[in-house]
Amino acid sequence: MKRLSFIIAALLLLFSCSAYYTEGDYFFIQSGGADMPVWVKGNTSSTTAIIYLHGGPGDGCIHFSLVPQFFIEDDYMVVYWDQRHAGQSQGNPDINASKMDNFVADTDLVIEAVKLRHPNLTRIFLLGNSWGTAVGAAYLVHGDDYAGRQAKIAGFISTFGTCDYTLSYRHAAPRITAYADVQIASGIDTAYWDECKSFYMNTPSLKDAADLREHTGYVIRSGGYSVDESAAPSPDIHILAFALASPVALFPLLLTNGANDTSEDFIGWLVTDDSLDAELARLTVPLLVVSGRKDLMAGWQAGLSLYLGTGDIDTSVSSYETGTEWTDGDRTFMILEDTAHGSFGSSEDITAYQAGIQNFIAGYE
Amino acid sequence: MKKSLCTVVILMVLSFSAGAEKVFMETGYIGETFTHPGGSVSVGIPVVTVKGGTVAAGLQIGAYIHPRNHVGFFALSYGEFIRPERRSFGFSLRLLGGYYHTWPDGPLYTNDGTGGAMETPNTGRPHLGIGLDAGWRFPGLSAGPFIPIIRIAVLGEYPYNGYLLPHLAVGLGFTGTFGHGKTAE
Image 1 (cartoon, each protein chain N blue to C red):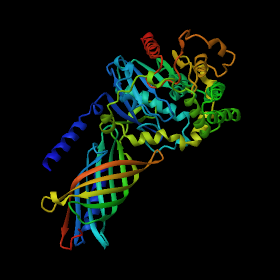
Image 2: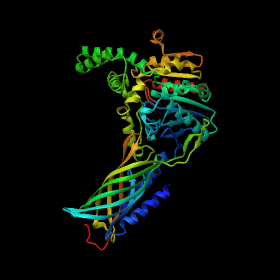
Image 3: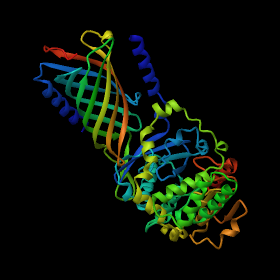
Image 4: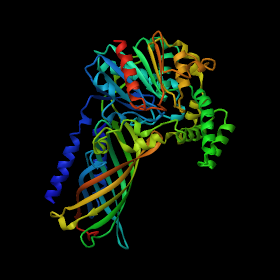
């Protein structure tokens, strides 16, 4: 009995000493009924901060940040923030009442709180991945006070993102249909791919969460989400520490990852609203857009839209069918040829991906 | 806030058990996901003896901390079915319901009204708490009236982003029966 008690006490003591409980700076922001965690990590003495805007919506990033380690942490302060309804975010805001204005206000509060706690900061970059691109772009161009918000930001990096799901869908549908034709011709899972073709034939645009779920399934099966899982860096998560001795609780992750199932109104708004397109021309901060040529979820055409500052890209697309990098003043557009919908710090073209981001940040020092 | 809640619950527990001939008391470590440390105390009284055991009712209060995530406090009433010891252990099952309060574990910032951020008092959020808890007593390892007990529980916190959020918890403690009535076990 005494020995067992000693072992249990020793185990608990060991877990309580986890580095995840002391590393960096950890705090919360409270906004609109949500208590959202913010973890400032990496080179916290740097005067440059990169605020990571995660994808999803609902994916979170605090748990991703346990993967050692996001490549820019060596050089810069990196700020991980779990948005409302996502990851380790607490509270009880109504997801179906959330709109882009809420995410813009939350982003601004993260920036202000980070500045308050780290007064030596001189430059703040936003790095928006996937859905995070829409959050970052909205922060910089949406509403009346966009100029004041842009003044706080040294640069905006978009990776595999879209500001307009209707545009992304419109460009993905014919490519997935063509992929389905090849599968059917090869006799592979013909019933599934027939159903896929029927979906795209009968769904000229996404209408709701059910459409998005079905479309996402076809994107994944046709390789438009991740071309080659094995090419991505292997996450070296210390699984015991992750589950038992980190700020991460597992059940919220499972629930919020399934948020699409209960957030019909929110997703319905997300997949049909293209109003941000009209505001993209307001963007004046240095911009790096990184897209995957094989991405069928966000699509490189969505990256082009952000780069050109307009949703009206149909006449421009053909000029970008070949090539990998374009620059116009403070704007750079990269297309990674072998990458689909890359994710947190990962891409099939990992060297070009990392170099592109590092060079962009260093270029504005 | 935390102190007043504790005081109210302790007074409730004391008044609840004051008139009973026999009282079940239990205290020990409670670990949310085992490693997020805390403690709990429960007090119960037998309500009725049924075939195979005793049905008891009581109150349980407890608190724990999941560092950098949240601090949880709960005050739950429960109904418990207690089976007597057979061979070397006894089993019990609790259904719990009551109050659950959580605080984000860290400084909390909000908009200061002028576009900046300011630290704000962390008053936490109230929730409905429900739970299911299985316990195993080991009388062979008892020390005086105190019998070691291991509990595995699922506590639910509602609402949490619109969901009922489950928390797994493990309890390690001692239970004892006090008073002059016939023992439940």
